[in-house]
Amino acid sequence: MAKYGEQYVDEQYLSAIEPNLYTDEVLIPGVTFSEDIVEGPAGGYYAHKLDDGSEVVPGVPGRDFTDEAAKDELIQVSYNNNFQKSRKIYGVQAAAVKFNAGEEYLANALNVTKQGRRYSALACMANEGSALEDTTETTKENVVENIIAMRQAVKDNHGQANFLLASTKVYASALQVLGLKETDDSAVITAQLMKRFGLNIIECNSFDKADAKYYDYSGALKTVDLTGIEMICGYHEAFKLEDNFATYRLIDSENFAGSKAQVEYNTAMRVVSPKQVIVKKVAGA
Image (cartoon, rainbow, N blue to C red):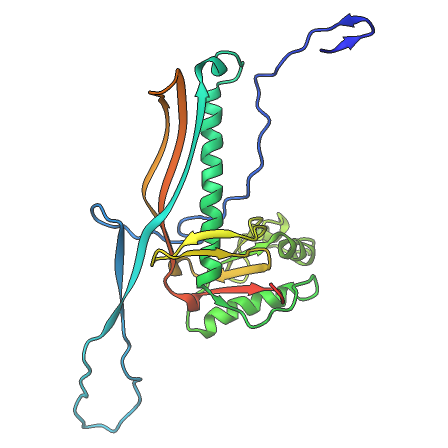
């Protein structure tokens, strides 16, 4: 109880809620991942990948074709990562606060669930992508060189590159080098760096978890240390991320007088073309 001198003074609880902090959303369809549309209910799907066969080299004119048998491989993608959050809200609790408890806890459950899904997706990218051989630390002096090297690594694999996720440290170095230069490029003028070198460069503040987990396509639980990652460069079609079930609901409880705020995602994730997802870590990570 608050007192001014010997006088008790009134206290109040605000109806506004102070916001919690979550990592930024970096999972953007068509930018950092692609979705495959599966017709009908399924717990997974297979994608065909054709075998190139033997290399085509020149020959002399006037010759027969050499036939090669059709051959392919199947790439499995499974909807086996389930993310849930459920909050119990007793009716007496909701009736005794000024804010809308149901709506606020539902929004909180959604943010927490999406953050967990985000960490798992990044763990999948980091674990199933290809590691860059260069593990030297990125600094202000070499940040542009390293970003270009990441793109080059994908192109040298005969792939495409259209996005780059950068740690907060790397992104800050890039801002120092590119954000203050006089230029007509609006992306640099606004310090957003959303489009440079043919890449959507996105700041990622989710490289801070040492034990990010996900289930791979075979059902094996993988634990990945994200803390040593500086950048992930790739092509959005090389990383598949899709939900076959999602719910976001506020329901009355059958066990107590009150409600439950519940969120659930059932998600498939896999790097289907590792040569088009390049991961740069620092030495020792």
